[in-house]
Image (tube, rainbow, N blue to C red; front, side, top):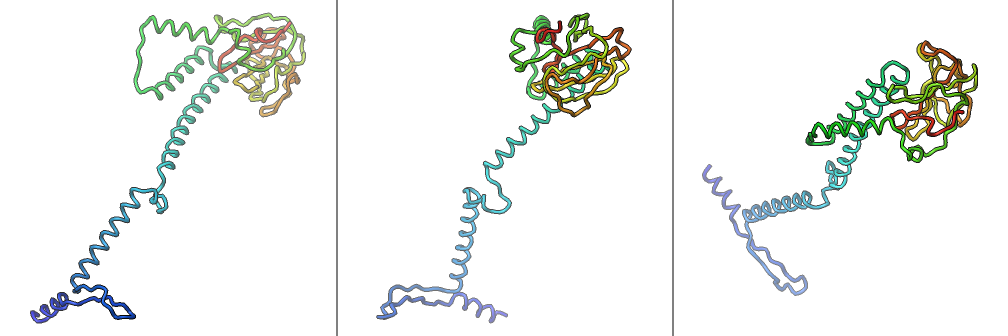
Length: 288
């Protein structure tokens, strides 16, 4: 065993000369001594350094983007941005759908307007809490002032609201207004007395989003005109359009009647909603 070990050691340490000659003149250019041990050591060190340099090159240069499994910094930033925007859109869509569902419940007479505004306020507060990192507390006077301003925004029709709607509206029917828009009494509509079976026309082009019978308000039809504008027509004796249909401005969509338990005479109960809040239709069209 000792003899074999000694022979192995000799093979590793035996010296060899590597000579580089000129092929034509056999002139010696340079030479150096080598052993198997030197070759193994230098070869191992060279391999280690090569692997280390390659790893550093891939890890800290744009070359890593070409390695399967790695993604570019710009791509990761773009993905993170899209993910944040998607979360914001989901939150906004949830709040808008909740507001619309609450508003439809009020329009159909299933809930009171006070319940609707409580839901809207809670949704707005939920949206603020999801955006703000901290909570800001105001004084009692400040809270009262904010509520007063909010009520003004909800119930008062400002002179520049026509510009915000951005479209020309036509009267759905001509008659005598028997009950005006009154936010204090929670009457967010106008009642127009007309003869039975008087044609009811669309105030502008739009899409029918609701067309059904209600025990309290008879045949009801609701149009979505875009730009966050809805028009509501109640107590009809008959409706000619179904949900999902497109209507043109001035097209007949129903006939007037006195259908529903809340009606006492033939008339059109007409509502106008903008950005989720009721507005006075007489500020935008003439009914008489």
